[in-house]
Length: 183
Image 1 (tube, rainbow, N blue to C red):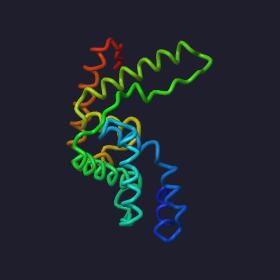
Image 2 (image 1 turned 120 degrees about the vertical axis):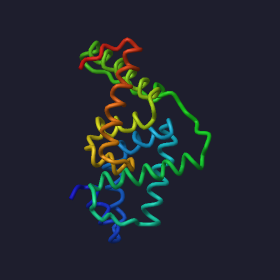
Image 3 (image 1 turned 30 degrees about the horizontal axis):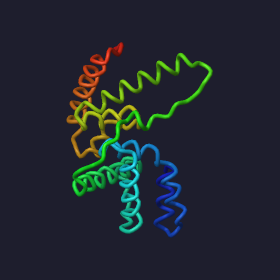
């Protein structure tokens, strides 16, 4: 049982600090995941609040058919889709406005890494949103294909195909930026 699942079970049993543990464990990843739906970190925060309200009010039961993280991301994705349907004109801020600049000893290395990250993020913004989501879940959240299939409501085969097409699409976009893509 992971920390998130343990915290949620404690919450269901009356310990309100359990939900805080869930939020502490998954906050950053969920914000990035939700920002993929709406294009705004601020709006992602609003959606995360709606996810928490759903957990507090409805108290859905985690049955263990998947990992707790998969279950939580699935609920969050569903809430995000409903939110976006209800708020049809989102305010989209460029991803560059959310970047943080870090100062480390190896300035040149950090500069190139940051530049490559910006190129990749811009490319992710230009590809099909489903492609960007499947890449995010696979590479940034380390979900397996089966878990991604549950989160995105698709079959394993559809996820394999989506990942293949997403990688090709991302490669094409980053090559347009002059990025040196290595196989």
